[in-house]
Image (tube, rainbow, N blue to C red; front, side):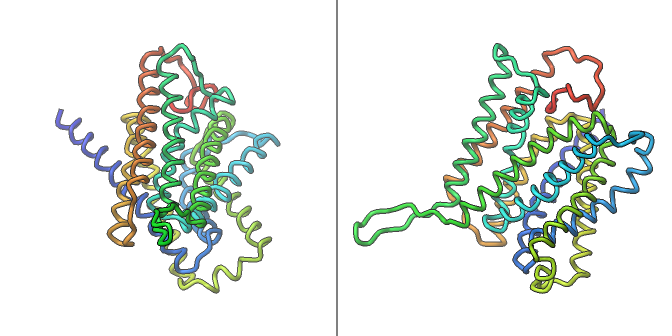
Length: 345
């Protein structure tokens, strides 16, 4: 009993600490970009650090699980995952942080579980029975997530100005914040689509650490190519107020911390399941809001809080319905990475 209690405390405490790390990472990315670093530069250094850290583990633990040959179809999937998950997602996400705030950036990913369910259902990787109450609740939760995200984006981008002539209050939208919210919504959509693609790829390449390492390396090469085509490779570093040495240090530290968080989440998921791990994701938003108010002096309007609340309600509704749906069905003996297995189970 005592051992189980200690394990429970470790899991809950660790999951909360992971959310602190994720919130701090958004603040750090925002700070690095304020020093003049471009999103592509951060993506290249941080993703290459991830590749260097994951590669030894992939060779040690998953070498026997590598496929004997890489088919053109599998290579195409790897390139697509790399472009979407590294170049496109991270660039959109970092640009969204720059134009909005770390608090907004940590709130948007809570939309992902609902979108993953919807996209997976479209491509028939997720089952949905309209006669089942849990399927209806998942749809309702997804709609609440989307409505909450749109509400939060609009409220975060709007400000009230008093018109002296007509003595009336008018809403004015900040163009940069609107564009930033669109970037973040696009990033979450890309992330959700990429998760579905990864799930189908793992059926052919059942080595998740190796898959992450390979796609990280390919993603770095694609991002470097994109940056060279945009003629920003030299400018991004010369205009920065941070040295190359510090940038490499930040990247390696970020890669190690990120790897530790992913590993802990994987262990916690194995012990308590994916639903419990996902339930802690809103903590990062609350922590980031607190950090932004205390350290950056940002103000959070009531409308944004309302939008966040709708997203959290929708998220927990999807997770709760998925958990109940899993308990109500007899699990068949499936491969862990079976493409037909529901993604959110």
